[in-house]
Length: 249
Image: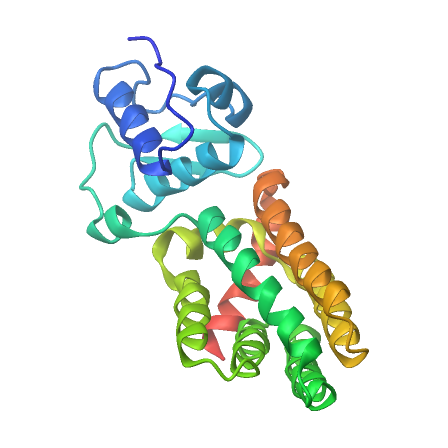
């Protein structure tokens, strides 16, 4: 059964469904290794990030398993579809939406009369992130506070709701599993530096620089999820340990 090109506008769910159909048809037998992301993306006519989302969706459902340093293997010939995944937004479309909204929020914050006070509040959130990193914990609480405080600075309840809902999509099973594979202390340290660039621009009341800094932060966040290699067994072990600490806090 040949693979068929997928139109770019379609979401990760359609890619996952096609791979599921190929597994069910015996193209990829139980225990076999799936082609790599690059090969699948080329055959399907989609981006590698879209393929990555689809593979993680199948992993969440139990149809495939990720073997660190080896590849992705068929774990079951059939698996119940996750109702949560059917409606879950893809991590990369969430990041793109946040890039549009939060870039403008950063610019508005830089133009506000209380820009320096906003910057101080954001710096406090960063300090919380750094404290968690020192403890070896993923600094999600401080990161959430940072982005929500930026939204609050707009004084617009609708925008605050949008930012809150988009950020909290991190808790959907697809985004959570993506983070489990590709987030680690080093990636969060890089993110902290990017947050500081946003704060510096707001404190300087430079709307253009604030917008650019937020765009760059979320672009780099996208790239860390999309471009990183699947972690090795040692890296995965370290990441899982930090993740467990984060969830225990």
